[in-house]
Length: 510
Ligand code: FAD
Ligand code: DLZ
Ligand code: SF4
Image 1 (spheres, helix red, strand yellow):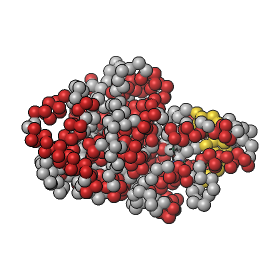
Image 2 (spheres, protein in one colour; image 1 turned 90 degrees about the vertical axis):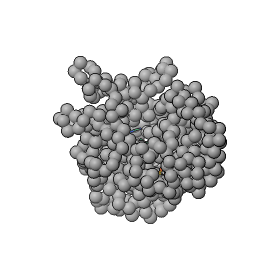
Image 3 (cartoon, protein in one colour; image 1 turned 60 degrees about the vertical axis):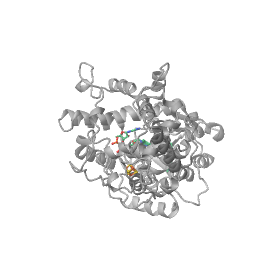
Image 4 (cartoon, protein in one colour; image 1 turned 120 degrees about the horizontal axis):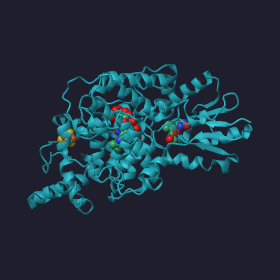
C-alpha cells in the first residue's frame, strides 16, 4: 500500500531519510505551503520567498526524477491552513499505509507531529535527520555527567570523528585546535570585500515574489533585490563563490564590522545549510581542500570549519537537550520590552541603525552584528529573552528555532546561565569602535560616557555590570571588570548609573 512521505520546507534534499525510506513507484510525496508555517513568526519577506521558491523547485526536481508529488501552493483562501490539515485531507481521500517523515528541526512542530498518529488514525514514522554530523543521542551522551558544556571540547570530538584538519598522526593540523586569536582584525577596506553572490530570480521565483508581496504585505523586510539561490545547483554556486572570493580572508576579518559593507568576508551559506540545499560535511571538506591546495590559510579554514562542525552542531545539541523548558529561561530576570527601533531601524545609534537596516533589506546580518551590536544592546538593556528571541526568529532568512534560540537566549542574553560562554558577551562602545568604522558616522560620541551625547553602550555597560554584581562578581573572567568598576570614584559611578537609568527610561528615543 502507498505511504505518504511528508517533506518540510527546510528538508530539501534527496538524501533525506524520509525519501530514502520511500519507493518512487509506490509512495506519494507531499509538500505544502501553509498559513501556519508562514505565520508562526513575522518571517522576513525574503525568507518567505526563499522557502516557497526552493520548495517549488525541489518538488519540480522530484517530479522530474519520477516521484509522484502532491504539492500545495499557498493561497489565503485555502481551508487546509496547517500541515496536519493537508495530510488529514489526503488521508480522508486515499488509503495510506503510513505517514513517513523526517524529524522536524523545531520543537514547536515536532511536538505536533508526534501526536499525529493518534489524531490521523494511522502510523506516523518519524525518522532521524542525518543532515548533522552528530546525533541528538551522541550529544546527550557527551553532555552527560559534565559539569560544564563547552563548545571547544565537543568541537574537538567532531574533528576527530570527521578527520577534518587532522594529521595522519591524529593531531590537529598546525599543532593547535583553534586559531581564534589570529581572527580579530579590524577591516579598513583592504583587501576590498568581495562582490556578494547573486542568483538572478527565474520565472518561478518572480512569481513567488509577487505572491509574497500580495499576501504578506505586513511581514518584516522587503522582497526587493532578492538574489538568494533556491536550488541545490544555485547553493553549490554560492559555495564556490565563497571559497574563491572570501574564504582566504574569512579568518582575519571574522570579527570585523563595517559601515559600508553588509557581507564582508562571510560565507552567507546558513540559509542553504539550514534548508538542506547544502550538506555541512561537504561544505567543510571543500574548505579544507582549499587549505591543502594552498589557496586559503589555516586560520581561515579552521575558523570556518569550527563555525559549522563546532558551533552549529553544539547549539543544535543544546537545543534538543533542553527543550521545551529552554525557551522560557530568563536567569538574569530581564523585564524590558523590545524597543520599537528593532523593527523600524529608526535610531541615531549608527551601529544599530546600520545593522537593522541591513537586516530589513537583506534578511541577513553577519554574526558579529547579531552578537555584538543588536545582541549586545539587548543584553545591556535587559530586554525580555522571549521578545528578543522572537525578533531574531523573524528577521533572518536563515532563522530556525533550533539554531536561533540557543544563539539568542544562550550566547547573547546569557539567559540560560552560560552554556554558550563562560561569561556574557557584554561590551561597551569601545569594542564596537575598535572593530568598526561606525562611530565616526554616529551622532553619539564613543569617547564619552555620562554626557547627553555620550555613546549609550558605555553607561549601559556599567549599569549592566553594577546591577548584575550578584550574578557575575564571583566569575573569574569578570573579576577584573568589577575591580575596574569599584576603583572608579563614587561620583563617576553615580554619574554612570544616572546616565544608564536615563537611557533605560528613554530607550525609544535613542
Ligand atoms: P559565516 O560567518 O560565514 O559562518 C559559516 C557558517 O557557520 C554559517 O553559515 C553557519 O552555518 C555556521 N555558524 C556560524 N556561527 C554559528 C553559530 N553561532 N551558530 C550556528 N551556526 C553558526 N545562525 C543560523 O543559521 N540561524 C539563526 O537563526 C541564527 N541566529 C542567530 C542569532 C544570534 C543572536 C546570533 C548571535 C547568531 C545567530 N546565528 C544563526 C549564527 C550566525 O550568526 C549565523 O549562522 C551566520 O551569521 C550566518 O551567516 P554566514 O553563513 O555568512 O556565516
Ligand atoms: C519556514 C517555513 C515556511 C515559511 N513555510 C513553510 C511551509 O509553508 N511549509 C513547510 O513545510 N515548511 C515551511 N517552513 C519551514 C518549516 O517551518 C520548518 O520545517 C519547521 O520550522 C521545522 O524546522
Ligand atoms: Fe554605536 Fe556608540 Fe559607536 Fe554610536 S558611538 S556607533 S552608538 S558604539
